[in-house]
Image (cartoon, rainbow, N blue to C red):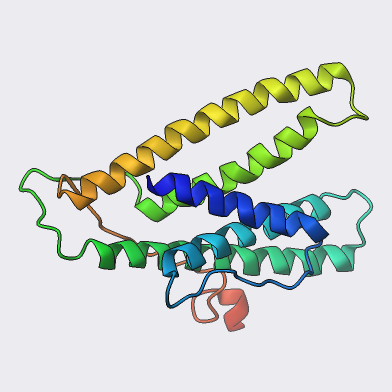
Length: 203
């Protein structure tokens, strides 16, 4: 099933990041873009999420220097845009993959595209990784460990459900029972022509 492979790639990216556990470490994609495009995109997507997860930790430091906080906020903004772009590349992959499918007359549309479901699956992999860390922290109280273990169980169940739903959606699209219609995010705040502050408008 598709999500079996996706979840393994997400775990691979997360574990690779945590070998150095630094937001400024170099990124190297182990999957060839030409020969393994989907795997390449999935790995990159999870890497972006993993780095941003740790950006979000850093910016919540109550003693952070304001200048450093502003610089970090800019990095988070850029990461969000990169994340959105990568999700849209994944949807483009599926649009091309299913372009010749004969859509049934009674086919329906889903509330979200496959890639946005995959986006949630990638972030869920990060939640599971870090909740597992908390559940096994030797310097934490037993109460903390038990609470985190209970949360981890819920996250693992959620991954099964979300994986099943994504697989079912892809199967439905492949057989024409559902059809893809992708709306690009059209984010305005990073666009110099659409954001009045970046455009330099005076109020």
